[in-house]
Length: 176
Image (cartoon, rainbow, N blue to C red):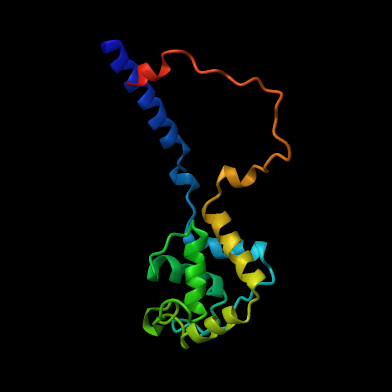
């Protein structure tokens, strides 16, 4: 009986360690503040909407882009996860006026730019095609959630050359 318990806990530990090691480490985490630059690298024609004047400097805040504000709105204002397509689509629906109400005083840039960029950002999003919006969502999800599964291309034909391994007898009993 003790051998079975020991085997069970050993298997459980191996499973847990496998799950933990699959999580990204601190060095691999992505800072939301840096993502906007990567989005524009992958979508160079995406509107920047970065001609707003900074309250602090009185100069054009070229780093305060539409994508940067969209990411900040999505994560910090709405508290949505950056790794799911549906959450990004909900955010875009906010910009299109068909989901939740956006409030000017809570919109990113409202406190740092002379003119609140919310209306011009909503207009810019509304002028995008569905293809452009879908490309934006895909790029954001790929950046925030670089899963190895998305990099693996599905096989065109199943591989029948490998001989399947039959389960060993008593395996179910060992797990009990």
